[in-house]
Length: 284
Image 1: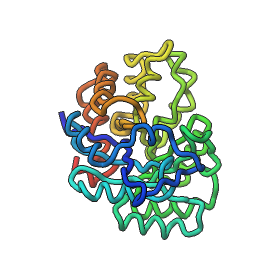
Image 2: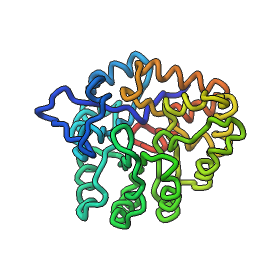
Image 3: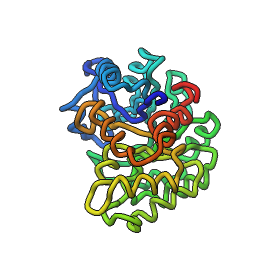
Image 4: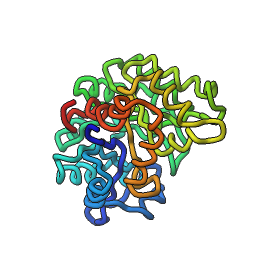
């Protein structure tokens, strides 16, 4: 088995004085208060679980657009961690802000359009004021992660067309509805994303749970997913500690879910795709 790499853990500082919470939308996420996880704790969890490296995702529901903790935390473990942060892409100065954060260590960006503290709002995905930031992502080869639901898929497709040179990574696979089981007709608009070569997907605990909901099964869903997108465009993200359980528990659930697919596909999903997205995590 190649290296196991996680592209969606979060870290929360234990020092509110140095890294004061300022959550996006004005409401701090409950998980960040109940299960704060410092970078040191993340490294301990990675060691116990056998996770080699990680692309750590900034917690917007804790720090808003201040990426200080994610870049500082990852800088302490440059052989293990890289940082993915968030910027207000509607701000006229967003490109300069992005460049500054890249100089401090960001290797990717994330657009958080909603989640645990706010209903999804896809309007930022179709706002032309964000286009200069997307153009800069193309110039700097920065992947752009998007947190959205099925309500934002039309906007994601439009962005994929407009910016074909930008790698788009969809958090939680945009939460497709899998309850009807095979052939998963309710997820048809989700599967249409496969036609865009620059769209990648993060498979997280949410998706593993959904693949076991009602008529869905891992054995019918994951092979179909791989057939549509290719394992080279799928990557595991733990969502630790937002999702409950240890990092080892979360990884085990993902491995169990993928037991129905081939070893080579598992290697891509659990590590090699991450290295394609974020070369700083090591060569393929």
